[in-house]
Image (cartoon, rainbow, N blue to C red; front, top):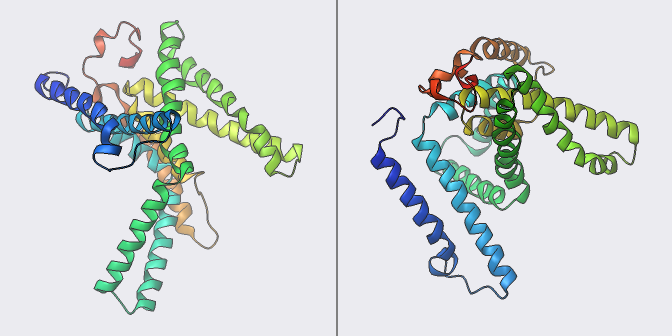
Length: 291
């Protein structure tokens, strides 16, 4: 294994496997799944697009597993700290629901495990067939981070902008891109322009804050997956829960999470944790080394 963290043999085998899978998955519907031939050229191309998308997602996962794991685990844990209150609340709700099911179902048994497993499988199938789940948790995080972080940030840094400027300037583009939801929000607010602007204003503020954080992650780690996993996690969780009526534990967890986030923000995103060859970053002009 060399300085990159992956041996040449592993890198070549992984690339060959991804190339083979990219081609093989195109024939999976007819050869493996035994689906009938598509009735039209349009349906044929749609099937090909879906297969290519699946191959792309699998390739990203394989790369994430082979490349330094810190780029996925550290940003995910760091982001989760901001949702400490939300996570504790969900845990309390889960324990309460589990206790009720146990009391109603007569305790822990094989039948109970079977029912829970069936519900989990059914829920997974429902989510897998929900186009909004794919949009919010997979397509949006990957495509938005690709455009607004992986493409824009190197351009701005190589254009001579300071790192701190890029962190707060780049999210403006990200925020303005979400203005396309104005008409949709306006319709949902019963065509009330004031309420629509309030909702859009909150959304723009949130996207600026998150965009700055995602930009910081990308610059510090130099890894595309860092902002992607943070983006997907935030989409799953929604806005953080800071307080909950009658549950002081939620407020305590939220405060502890925020303190932990601020305390670990720079140590867990220190560039040398993700790349020990930052001295040769000519394009980023040393910004990836924290200078």
